[in-house]
Length: 81
Image (cartoon, rainbow, N blue to C red):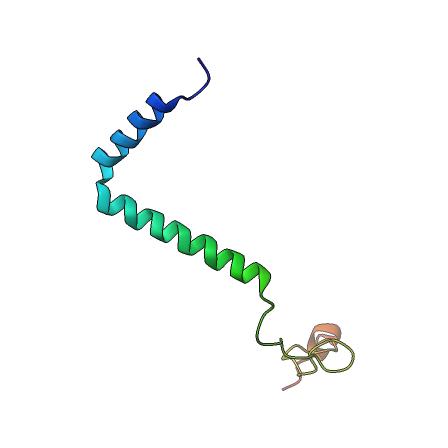
């Protein structure tokens, strides 16, 4: 017990054929093979396009909508309008 012999493998294959059918198993094998091939290709080939270079300083220099100083009405209690 513990080892899988040829008889057990044949039984498993027969059950798989009964459950899925020959055509479905062939499709699964084809999809699995293509997936492995694409995975290996993706690992071995460097990316074709380079990412956009950041400006000097390494950060995005576009202005943001947040204010850099506190609101005057919050600090003095007076309304600015």
